[in-house]
Length: 422
Image (cartoon, rainbow, N blue to C red; front, side, top):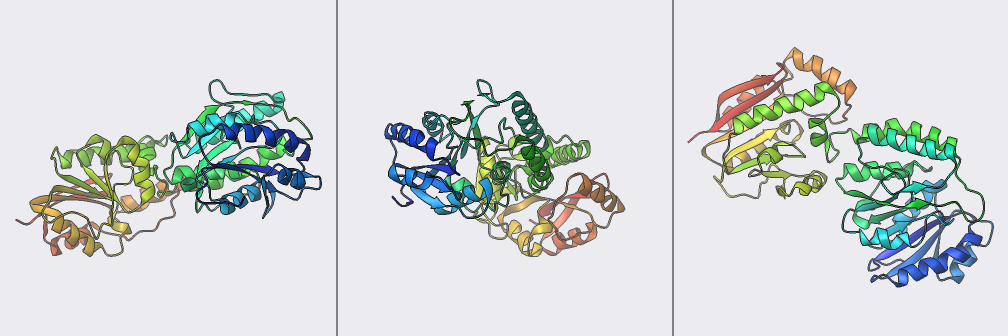
């Protein structure tokens, strides 16, 4: 059977010399799949086996795909690229992942786009040597903390993936670090991750291909690169995480901005947040409509069931003179034509309506100093346009607004309240 876009579930087994295990495992997987109300098929990703792995897999009706690239990462990339089922379930072929757990993971497919069979949540367990159990638990705790991910078992390869969550992933690791890389990218794209407890069992036949301490070295080398990706402002939950950040300067700055915006916006009912990201101002003011051109940000914020729309700031899907207040915070630096955006906001505001704009003031020495410090603590690759306070006021004045109030955060970030001429 070839891969098909209509297939509900594909079970994926990365294999290297697992013929003896497959003879026992494949019939049991087929029994489990027969009880599911879903179309399903088994795929073996062969990494160059020298035993009867390929012939055994084919004898039991599984489709064999020859792995491209090296290591476990190569097997996972091959599966993601070649198999087009709605759901892909990856598991080991050595009986450490009990096949009956397939149905438990599949039953939770609507809870999240990635469902992990976890050894490190309540009722989960790993039956493995003490040294490996300690190292696995320690690495998972460190990764979860450093990467700000609420996942207990980041290194479990027993997972269920929705096609949307893995389509277009740019995976680079050949080692088992690809497992953390997938989760970081899923988080950055706003997809949900859930965990289902399971017990990891000893291998049935053959020797494990894993080398525990090599794992530790490889994972720690990968940690910094994953941290930088996780902390990019393009990450779906960037603004929310900044609001609750462990970095005192970042947390204080986000909350100071939040309070200033809240005070300026007031309690009007027809409000719009342009380029809302995952800002907590939407949770503070649930009557506000949030728009963003980035699907990942909206995908993350949908969890709080706010009023959201996908749109470009220069082409808003709203009628003329509709909103009482429009918020444009930390956005203007990244748009192609700031004047075009300001004119579009003018169109959507009622006569006498308020526009609140916030940007870093590049003319202030405070921003140059604090911006450099902040960049060291929280790196972000985005480079935006620079505005001085006078340039921003001139831009607003040229497009029909007059300035009523200006406020600063530490003399560095400027927030202006401008009113549309009546």
